[in-house]
Length: 74
Image: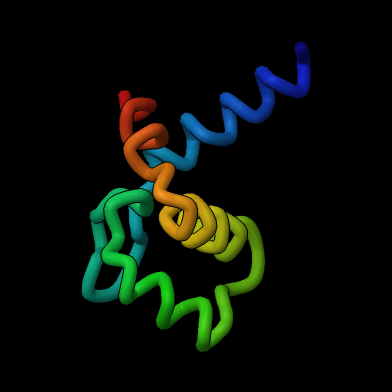
C-alpha cells in the first residue's frame, strides 16, 4: 500500500509541475507538446529530478496516458 501512495504522490507532483524555462516556461509538464518531448528525447533529457520528470512525461504521452495525469492537477 505504501508503494501505491508513493506512486500516486509522484503522479500528483508530476501533474502539477511546470516548465521552469524556455519557450514553454509556465506550461504544465504534462501539457508540453509531443514534438518538444521528442526533441528532448533525441537531444538527451537534463540531469537530475527535472530530467526524470520530463522523461516520465515523454513515456506517459507515448502511451496515451496524459489525460489520466491531467486529472490529478490541483
